[in-house]
Length: 351
Image (tube, rainbow, N blue to C red; front, top):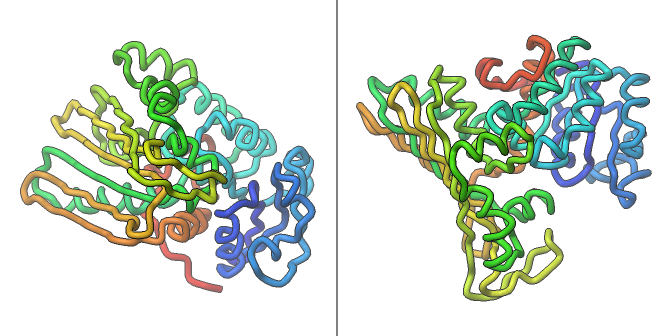
């Protein structure tokens, strides 16, 4: 990381950590952009809560110009959760021939949810000799930790995982993607109904680029890719989460009334040619004061093995993972390359 020039695309909650972690690892933030007028014009030190560093957040509309003039080693994109919402950002990076890594959850393994756009980005990145990928908390806690447990097993029949997180920690895009603040009827219409279709109908939606996967949809694809499993079928079901009392959401800027969705549970079931089933669940919602993040996975087979991690600091872990992956992104082949093909996560020795 020492001596690397990094560009920050998106200066919200996650960038507070990604930028600081880059600097503390010996890298330099040479530019930053955002679409939010409240952030544009600020020194990035103000965003990180440190002294000013002399780098001012500029309008994202200037991204191509800035990337061509600054020529960073890698761009960190921390904006939205769906690949389609990052098309402009990632295509700009690919056009400029600049490596990029994003916290976008779908970008973890978008080949199985938006293959058309993934291929488009992949083609342009190859033409301009750069690498685009997605990483974050799931790279370690839903990915590499799980494949390591599988590697310690004699035989496996099923991989079952469940992870919960507070949507308040990540920003409004993620909260809305989880249906937080919707009525039961709105959730059914806008979120759940998407998956009340046949496999054939779902595949057509996926190929059109209009599918909205839950986070585990892409995680299951990543796990199968890393483990060399052949997917036969995959489906998901989104279930709203409710409270019987009102709860405040600072991210949504509203009171989520009793009977409104605080978020959702999404269960993804994947069947493979090798006879191994993956059943994974992510629960994202506005937490009450007694709730906390939890990550639990069980490998069924010989032997059965369960891993439980209570209260992981998912925001910081996401940002540290992204920063630690940067050397792998720079070293990877050109194109859209998932981290399942980049080897294990490694700690970066501090400068």
